[in-house]
Length: 124
Image (cartoon, rainbow, N blue to C red; front, side, top):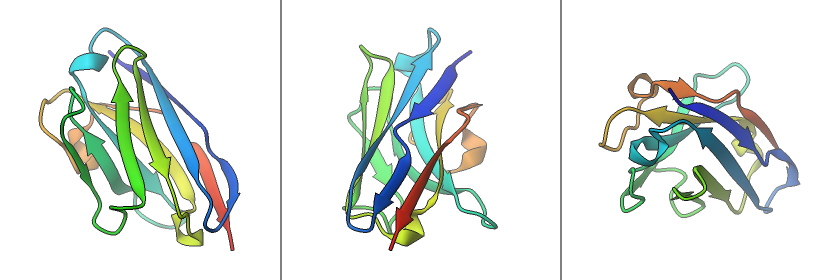
């Protein structure tokens, strides 16, 4: 069992940066592939980024690569999402998720545990 709590969301102007954090509790965090997803109003939840249990492998949604960076600190049971050069279209609720697999996972169905989400709003 893994419990996830996101933080770090807020209101930022276009071009600005935010760093989201996801604090995990549970014995299996260090062996879990982690991911970030987002959901804008009226839209489907979409994949943002994923990171392997060791942090040695990452994958991103194509449109976000270069602006967003996923990382993790297993000693702190925390995964991060650094978001730079933010655009109004990045406005969404961002969710952290944990998978029971060792492989990178880019689909929501591949994750077993979800946080409650944190709102990111980017103003023009």
